[in-house]
Image 1 (cartoon, helix red, strand yellow):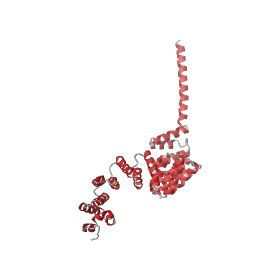
Image 2: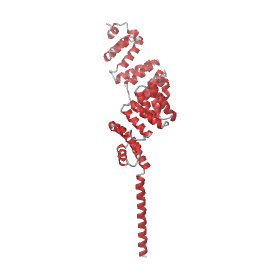
Image 3: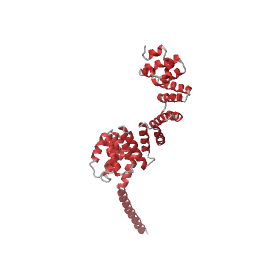
Image 4: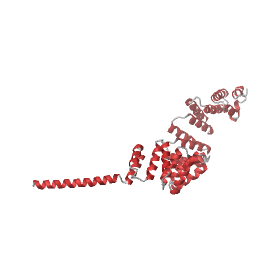
Length: 330
């Protein structure tokens, strides 16, 4: 009985050892599986574990596609601001044949980040040629066109990206910005609103939106955008200054003055709110206060002398000798 139990135990142990060996071989094979390795590297990059991802790329360079290796390594180096190394890898990668669309796109992004915008456009076009439906290279191309002031071309490129994915955030914001910079403020408004939904902390988009509302004479929307900007990015004197100017357009002069004073309290050396306050005081014939305010303006920024001289809203104080003295006529 004891011999039988011993034999049974030995057999069970042998089976367990064999199974363990099979599992170990399977796991080892699985751990070096190409797709598994690529997914793990992407996972590490998405988790911002860039050093770990870089080490994996180097360790398994022979087990993953060479295009994938260079594409992800270039991305990591750019993210780590190691631009010289990234450019070196771009030059190495460009010797490959063939080169994937994703690799071309990452090369384009690298050149964009080092401000070689024409190179970025060239390689983005290479990526687009291979995969026309991928919106990413259009974004790299469009952003590069913005940087070299080709706003109309950028608008066309971002529109192409949105044909393939109408909700692609980077293309939406790119189109919004290029429309704004091209002076198409009214057309920019819906895209700026949509872009801000994707990027709630992007104060630049909110400022562009406020500016566009102002040009469109949508003053209530403009005021709301500036108020949202104050909530999002803290207190800025220029925001209060612009709010004061907006309330002047709405003929709410009390709120205008409150905002000008708030801007001055935040930055006593900011000339613009003093100047706007001077205009308001002049309109209400508060001569002494207006002239004192104008004196402060020209002390901070003498360039306002010529502006004041040509400003019809200051007509009520222009005939006083102090005004002529302040603007350099005496």
